[in-house]
Structures are given as C-alpha cells and as structure tokens.
Length: 390
Image (cartoon, rainbow, N blue to C red):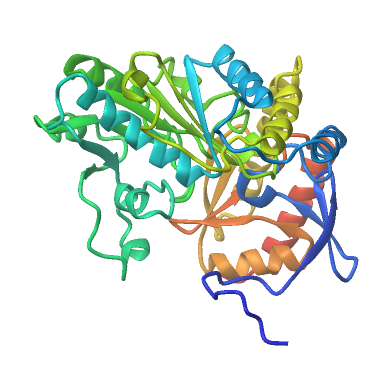
C-alpha cells in the first residue's frame, strides 16, 4: 500500500500501538522506555488513568461548541493557570506555534493600543525555535526551516542568545518587545547565562517593551519548576504554553498580564477549536496532577539523579560525549560523532530519545519516572555507548 502521508518527516521505521506509563509498545509487541515523551508532551506518560478518565467522561458528554459560547472547563483551566503564574488572563489555541503566534500578536497589539503602532518589531535570539507558521519561522530565523518559504515575514530582529549587550543595541524606535525561550530546546538544550533573563526584564521595563517567554517546551514542570522563568526570579508579560498542557491532547495557551493584554478585545484574535470542552477537560486533569503536592519537587529530584548519571557516563565515555546540559527532566547530551547513528542504536536497545541541534540528543522523559526508570535508561545508554562508534 502506498503511503499517502505527505513526506515532511524523516520518520523512523517503527509504529507504536499502545503505551503504559513511561513505556511504549510497537506493533510487534516490543517495549521501549520512552525518554522522548512525544517531544516533551506526554508529561504524565502514556494512558495515565486520570487523563483516560477525564477524556472518556468529557467525550461522552460534549466534544466541541466553538468559542461563540462560554466553555466552563476552559474558564476553570484559565483560572488555574493564572492562579499559579504571573498572568491575569489566558487565550487557548491548539499548538505551540499557535501560542507563539498569539504571543506575537499580544506584543504588537499592546504597543498599538497605547498609541505606538510604529512599534511592531520583536527581538528574538539565534538558535530559537518558535514554530512552523510563517511568522514563527521568521521569529526563529533558522535558514533550514525558512528555505523555500520566502519572502520572510517582516518584523523580527535577531541577536545572539545570552548576549544582553546585543539585545540592548538592537532596540530601536520600532521595537515592541522580546521573545525568548528560558532554555532553548530545539537548538540543543541551551541554558542562558546567569542574569540574561533579568537583564531582558530590565530592558523591557526601561523602554516600555513587552517580555514574552516561549515556554512551550520548558513549561509545566519540565525544568524542575512549574515554569522555567522561576529559576531567574523574573516574570514575563506574555507567555506561550503547549506540549505538556494537554498531556498528549492538542492544546496551547497564551498567558498575559492585564497590562499586556489591554488591546486583546473581542474580535482581535480567535480559534475555532481552541480550548474546546474536550481539550480543556484533559488539560484540567493534567494540571490537577502536576499541581498535586510534591509532584514537581519529586520530578526535580529524579532529574538530578538522571543528570548525575549522565555526568558519570560522560566521564566514562569521554571520547563519545562532550557535555551534559539542561535542568530538571529537560536534559541534553552533546555527542561526538554521528548523533543520528547513536539515536538508532539507542532505539535498537529499547530507549527512545529526541534529536536536537548542535549534535545534542534530548532526554525528555515523562515527569512520572522514578529511580528505577532512571537506572534502566542509564543502563541502556551505557550499553549503547559501548556499541557506538563515533
């Protein structure tokens, strides 16, 4: 049978049919330890009973109404997210790209609503990945993603990640704000230098710009705190969320302060599917688990154990690994040699990981893993590195 799926992915030749906790099983019945979690999405693992119950209950009642009407489950989700963050309001879409598009619109609209429509440009950072829409591609400005999709959407100026002086120098009379990831995921788990995010906050305040954080990958416990920005003691004006929010069900969110969202009035933005009853019900269930007492703290401790084990592996396999990066359960291994080949070896030995830029493999396991899963994963990594020739 001819595969009719558009060939935009270089897919591994394996298909999965069920999952349980941190494990996933292919169509031949083989079990894998999933340290990719659907690219940081399956925060509670596979087939988590709380999520299954929520999905079944909502699915048997009401799937979709559109945002022409009130959606109580969406209102509850917004109340939860704002109560546990910097924000006063939330908008819901379906993906991380949509969330970042929404954040970009909030930043621009803020300036326009305050009588400064000439301020529309947003400063972004080299290595950024904000999505695959035309605007988010332009914000990320990675040539491998932009090729063939010109002309590039105007309105973005890019400087090196972590370079506060360059960010300051890039501000002009047309600048509306900053868009930045607290940790860059797709480009290789790049943690910013100390003081960088605080410096951006100070620049934004000084010039009446908005500071927008892309926490699509870092948000909701992934880094060992509820949000990645908490490490730096700063708060954004706008934030994009997705991935973990639905635990596998598509949903994204834009969070904003009342000040930042001043221009987002009726008719300025919308989404047919965004935050529908089914998606909101699942996301509420995800939040109930993530916010349970001790959940994030336990995940952070497991992340420390995994990172310590990765440090040991780097010392042991110093000719094949050159660096361990990240925080919490958002970790990366910089590989010496063919990263793709190592990923294939790992999968062959029963461990799933995710590729990233800078020759880094990402380890993004579900936040429910325990010490035994860490030991199992480290064992597979050790065995695979012995088999791997750079």
